[in-house]
Length: 260
Image (cartoon, rainbow, N blue to C red; front, side, top):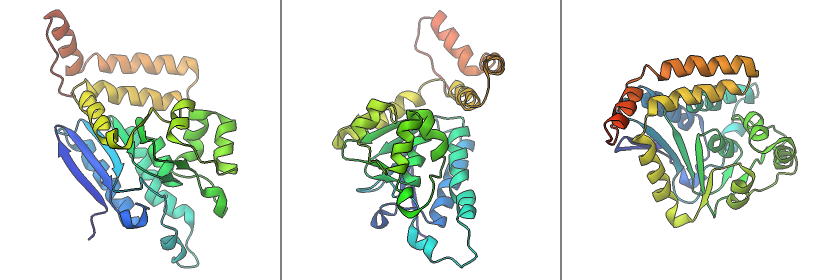
């Protein structure tokens, strides 16, 4: 079987590299399944403290491989592909109790753009571009696009990105809050790895609880969410990371967090 997702675990950082460069790293079903499996394995592997997702060669990800979709049987429904390929990936990234950093090294189109935007921190090469692409072929954004886009940039800008198929440069994406940071191409991976190294050395158990709180904040009212914060803070206060952080502070030394 082809290796559509390259994996490398170094210094507690798992790098997942989309690997269909001849097709601009566009997704086919086996590739989506491999990414799902890699994320599931990472969730259970205590050696993994942070995850970095990027693309191989020039593109980050061109979204769905339309040739695969066009070759399906007449009774094929696109919604089934969304449910089986993309939804599990988005859910895994949002619920994994570890930080997920995305380094967008080139064009991020369609589901590829939205895959990046559901990650915890997004850096992009200044030579990259973000584009929804769906409206050109009569589809709606998937891979969480209609959920995350208006929350990141507001309804009007999200509408323009879809309806007008507006291309967004990384510099503009940083300015409007679509991504964390635009980086020169030659420095992208190094800077992303430096961020991952910092995150991996920090109390990652708390990061998982933070992600849980952020996910729930998208649907809770204030009273509900204040209670969520209290409950999660109780759980955070029982972690080994919290105990180590307090002890290190009292002993005036650098903490040694284990992500537990």
